Structure formats: C-alpha cells, structure tokens
Image (cartoon, rainbow, N blue to C red; front, side, top):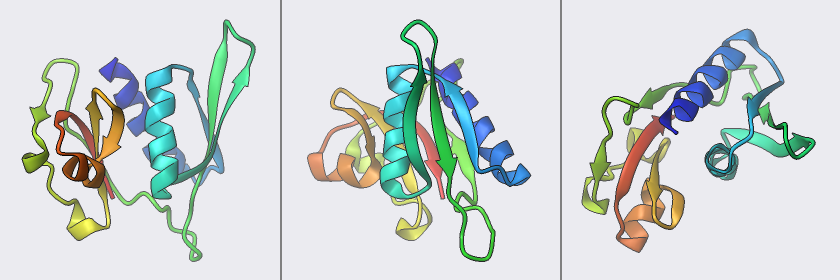
Length: 130
C-alpha cells in the first residue's frame, strides 16, 4: 500500500507547482485516512469521496497562502515499498520545529508525530510534510 503514499506525495507536489485548485486520487481507506489527517493539519481542504461504489475517487482541494505560495513547502517520504521504516514514539521528533508533521501508520490509524508522542505508540513512519 506504500505505492499509494508515493502517489499522494507526487500528486500533491505537482498540483502545487502547477497551481491547481483540486486534485484527485483513486479511493482506498488508507489514502482517505492520510488525506483526512492532512486536512486536519491544514495542508489540504475539502476531502470528499466522489463516484459510485465500484469506482470511487477522493477529491482534494489544495490550500495556498495569501500571497499565492502553496501551503505545502516540502514532503519527504520515509517508508518505501522496498524499505519500511518503523519506530517508537521516542523516535518521532518534531518536523521543522513544529511547523511540519510526521505521519505515522499505527494500529490506531494514521496519526501525527504529536499524537504518537501523546499516546506513546509507535508504527511505520510514512512521510514528513512541512
């Protein structure tokens, strides 16, 4: 399922560079949970599922600053299909002094670095975003 992570990262980067308002992804519960978490953090908005049951899509609105710069300044993928990165809550450090976030896949779902430290659980480190 990490192929879905790289697709999310690439789509968000290229859509931001192109200045697009919206982008779409193929639906999966894992992708939806990642995009919902990014929406909670303020990097994207309006995460909604469109389409009929066999073929569904996730439509996401991108967020820009008042001067037109994209809200997402950078993304670094940590876990890849060929190399998974796991860690405990002690290894989930702040990203860009708290201005960014580390997304972690845990048994309780996709959580940020702050939530992982507060709940004291570890998991697979997916990517950093700032």
